[in-house]
Image (cartoon, rainbow, N blue to C red):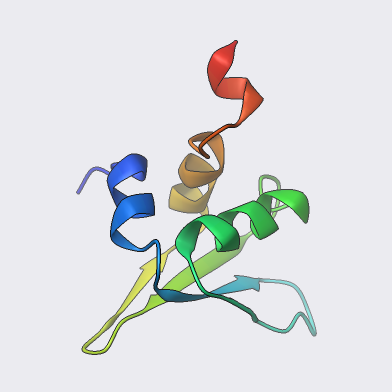
Length: 84
């Protein structure tokens, strides 16, 4: 399934999310929106690391693995790279 980053940011703008870097002893970090989780990932090297963002929903969790996280980082609202 293709990822629509704009729709994902809107759909999960108030969802609890966690960011997990796949390195030894890295704890998961919690956020209250997908955009906040993706910004954290970007600011902490998530563009170059193996990473996972989980959106925690009442009935199921949605997991964005490394490739999808990289797409979300590239599509962050207000990101200067989109304007070039």
